[in-house]
Image 1 (cartoon, rainbow, N blue to C red):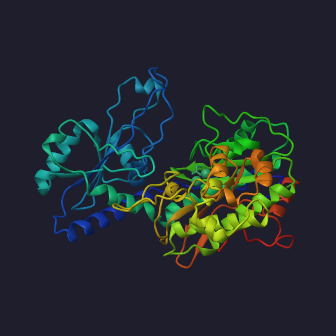
Image 2: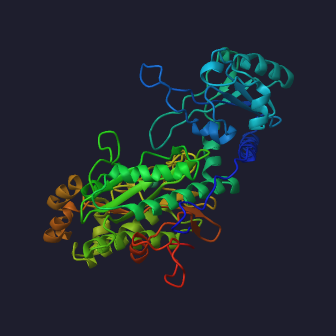
Length: 501
Ligand code: GLY
Ligand code: MN
Ligand code: MN
């Protein structure tokens, strides 16, 4: 992008074919599963979409964002819908709410079923008060009285997905266990059309990160960095939603992993000598990005900042260089830990044998979160632990949102970090198991530092992976961009290589 132009992008066209291919993938997977269990190829997948919420007990409507499984299968933007897929024929149906007449006054024209059939490219559209009759008619015609409902555990939140409900559901047999693992696995491997949207969310978010990097100055407020990011992705990218609340941490706030929430609202003033850790990602047509850039707010790395930043960048690059199908994500987490511990040892913050540090799980003191997570319609996309898979128990590894082996078509974040978090560091300094590894003078000097995280969204290919996030990563790239150089920097000046494989 040229530095004089705010953006070189325009939002891509949204293709409903993406969702019909998602439905087809589920249809085939579910039928294969039923065949393998010698069960009849009959029944309906039935999902209930999200409901609009008001702010607490008021009548103020919160901006609706569709529930993610429903978005995956139907691409529907509006609240209050149901959707079905016929297991025998693949036919899809949407059920829309019958809206009151004054909807037309407050919310806009009331559209007929034909409008939604055309918009969402499904076979048929009815009203939600017709679900029972329509499904009874269908099963009398086909003999299929079985509904496959979505019910299962989200292994990140530990919450259960609530299955669909409608008046008259008791007339049907319901299966609550088959659909969730199969549909979740469909979401794990991205199609080309899904990858194109994730790439777009990455492109506009990377561009916005660069814009923020360029405009950051000592004396600004953290929320001004957040505001610049949101403005860029909405104004030039058409991204009304973010994948998550922006984390705009500077100075010691960057040791707070999920800073930016209501009680810590990105409101510190940027000080000379601070590092910024900006974790921000836009979402476009449900598909998201999750990108973190760390840089000095005055545009020039100090020796200490370079040491920490390089430790994390080396871990980020080592992981991306090793990623390919079949590689274990637990091994990638350990690789990142090892690179960081070796760098801290080289930088004189740690002393002793790195193998022993690894055995004592010292890495978790500096990187308590997992190396990364699946990404898609949800920032923490589901499918990290297959049914029966055990979450590792060791410090650090227990935070991993997946312990799976990589597969072609997965999109996963690579987000190593190194933080000085008193709540972890002070007990570790006293712990008989790990206290011997610390150079206390240096560790104490670094305690107010905060932390560094570098996060890219990476797609696994048949032979390796592709880094979808295109931000300045090398120290010289960041300093050049902050000093006004265009991004990407001309290849004659710097070799590319921020992990592209
Ligand atoms: N931004 C949340 C995360 O990195 O997982
Ligand atoms: Mn993030
Ligand atoms: Mn992340």
